[in-house]
Image (tube, rainbow, N blue to C red; front, side, top):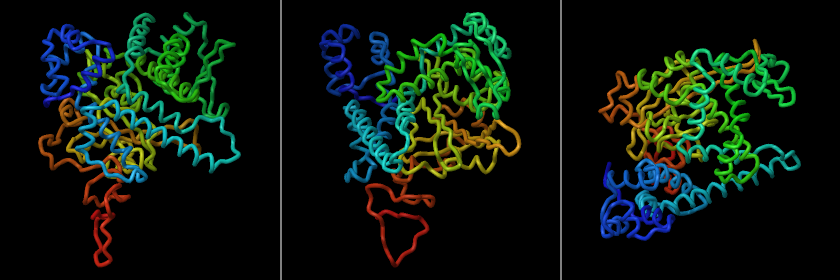
Length: 470
């Protein structure tokens, strides 16, 4: 850990709790002079002091972490890449802002997000003038993604509730479907019926009838999917108040976003119930995060395992902090969850050199990639396609590429690092956060000119690299 001078953050923490410097010093068993020097950035925040802050105030040390800084810097670079701003901000300036005034940085990112949403909504309204506007807007989905992103994709209350229910209901891995069916009947008098077909209900997987006390499920679902749908319904039946409280804490701007957040939280609980935190983390560590072996052991699919791996961030028992992403062939990101600082731009697409796109050319095969971002951070990425359908011949099928990545310093804990030279930086593929904000000067795959840099326009010269900057 490098020296961390974060006096403004410490002073903000003190002021939020209405403490004087002397009171904070007494609580942390430090001298008032020492606290004063910390707040003036004359001394760095050391690990022992961070642990004292965590013990006294219950503050997650992520508040003072380098990864948290990197996340906010990436968000600010994304926001400031907007061509309408007309100003080029150096990364050094962003680091200074994030280190000393992170609250202002977060506020700017939030303002930019709301501005972007308003513009998108206005553009959509102009294109669809006269159409029905009762559906949830894209902005609502983005708000929910940001909600989980801010929590590092970890919801402690739901993990704990899931583990408690797993024990109380006497559930066991390998027989979850029968156990959940029995629990629904015994606790809620709900019957589970496998009577939904794709032809009958337009591909519906789960339909709950509160009057008839029946949970209708599609017989086309695999055992792990059936258990997930039953667990999702249990979240609504037993944890409605918790889902409401958590969705209220999200400060969402619309009823649609709050409703989507409740569904997302219920799905989180379902994943935590069929893959209980302690059992799953122990197995993941023992198997060196082998996704396919974990799927066989717990009876769930590849995507479910990847999603759950990205949530294992309980402070006293952390797994590898992963970034989880799901993309389609067109590059649309339909799922994006992160326990790390990894960031991809929301403007100008993602990086075509990223192996999640190569996976479509080799369906079903796991691909590995060491990828280095422009700031020098290197990640190990695992990518594989998944596909599913709900009908027979001729019916549409969905195909996605699932990406799971972690910082290079954790790569040795993964079975996928086997055969890779983790010590040689030259083996890493140089990728970026998106062409519009990527400042790599000689990328042959660049699709847009970099924002904030003048193009090199020369009629006498033709370059191999597109959109060269002056």
